[in-house]
Structure formats: C-alpha cells, structure tokens
Amino acid sequence: MSVFTDEDVHLCMPAPQPRMVRAARDYLTPRFASGVDAVLWEIIEHPLPDLDAIDAVNTASARTQSGAGDPPEPMAVAAALVVLGAARLDLDQTEARLLNTAQASGMDWQQIVAILGLTADQAEERYRQLKPRLDEPAADTPPPHISGRPSHRPRAAVRQHSLPQTSTCRRPSAGRPATWDDLEDEPWEPW
Image (cartoon, rainbow, N blue to C red; front, side):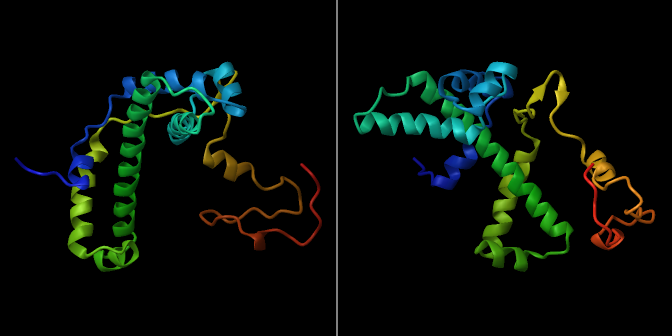
C-alpha cells in the first residue's frame, strides 16, 4: 500500500466538470450572497466569486461552532467542495501561464526558483505537474451583464477613448502609446 503526500493528492484530484461547477455556484449564491452580490444574482444571476462562496460556507460552520447559527447543509458543503476544485484548477492554470510568461520574458529557472523559494528540481517538477492542467476544461464565470451589454469596454476601446478629445491633447504617433508627455500643460476640461 502506498502513502500519498498532500502534493500527490492535490495532483490526483480531477478538475470538476464545468456544468457541475455552474450548478454548485447556482446552488450557493442564492443561499449565501448578500449586498451587491445578492443584487447581481437577483437581477442577472451572476454567481458569487468562488472564494467568497467557499468562505461563506466556512463562516456558517464557524458560527455554528460558536453557537450562533445553524450548520451549513451537507449539499452546501458539497457544492463548496466542487467550487474549491474549480478555484484550484483556475489557480493551477494561472500559475502555469505565469511560469510560461516568466520564461518567455527571458527569466531562467535559477531566477524563477530564487523568487519562489524552491530548488530548480522542485520548480521544474511543479511546472511539469501544472502544465497538463492547462488543457482541462474550466468553468468560467462571465462578468456581470446588464441589459445584455457588457459592463466593461474592451481594452482597445478604453485606450482609444481614455484621452480627452480636445485641442489640449496631442495624439501619439503611430505605434507609440500615449504618455503624460503627450499632454500639453493647459488645464483639462471635464468630458
């Protein structure tokens, strides 16, 4: 019989299916959302952020242990465990992408391990373990939408419209981003 370490168990856990994650989020949000999160759920069915949903279940359990509330339902705990799997997958995929970014930016493993506090072998092993997680399907949570329109503008649109369209602003030359030096020293007028 073999003994698994915490790391082995973490890597053996499969990613939850996206539809299961959505169902778990849909179960937890109406039971634990408050404030803006409750309004977002009521109006556009936008779920609680994963870590907030998990924390809400843990908080309900802590209140019970202190004698100040009812325990969370087993189904809520099960849903939180599914959401935890999704949060873990998201974090693993983020870490793998960031390690790719570090290498693409010219950092070598010696620099990466110095930052992470690992040996080179540990960092390379971690990356080998994380890389396959990039291919696992994730259950994305779309940003809140109101009236069918995104609540945010694409980055290109933000850059294009972020400077005032007045004579006090010189447009940057092609291929060069706008800087503070591109603005003349005249006072700005509100948009």
